[in-house]
Length: 207
Ligand SMILES: C[S@@+](CC[C@H](N)C(=O)[O-])C[C@H]1O[C@@H](n2cnc3c(N)ncnc32)[C@H](O)[C@@H]1O
Image (cartoon, rainbow, N blue to C red; front, side):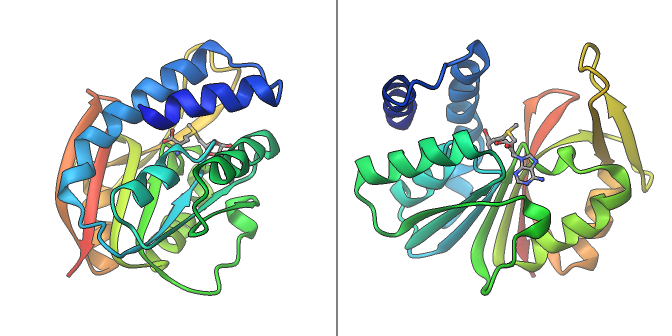
């Protein structure tokens, strides 16, 4: 919760409003982390955090012992807040890049790739390609929090949240995810519900 408080302070100073959803998200982040923190070996690992938002998870990865952590997000306000967080923590091995993921060109690979609450924002027609890009950047572990359905069929479902203003999301079936991770050379080492029937955390490790 340490970073949640610090982020609240930073938003206030930068005059960035803190909508209700941010407060909820901070709680959700803390809960999410409790679901996978202890099954990942962070020690001396390099970490990429895709869709890093204000950098909560990026900073948390360092706290867990990672050697370095880099966050990428397309939203200027989030990156502005994340950079301020980095300054306050004073960690030189923490960095942030403002970029849409689709245009992000990594010049290296990372031991651990975090992809939390992000991949389901990718449209179904681009989902497979972007999923593969995420996994290709990891030499060891991928942690994904994503929307799923429990179907064993190979299926990507277009899903529209009620009252979501026409915002379309993509849900991958269990069958699709198991098949895809397997084909990309990963085994699933951990799976946990974030919200039953909706979001799950999957931890995949290179075989
Ligand atoms: C639901 S938030 C999840 C944030 C954080 N990873 C977490 O677990 O709380 C999704 C984040 O992904 C970012 N995002 C969505 N689409 C993106 C894209 N195409 N490229 C880069 N960032 C994107 C949003 O700006 C937002 O910060």
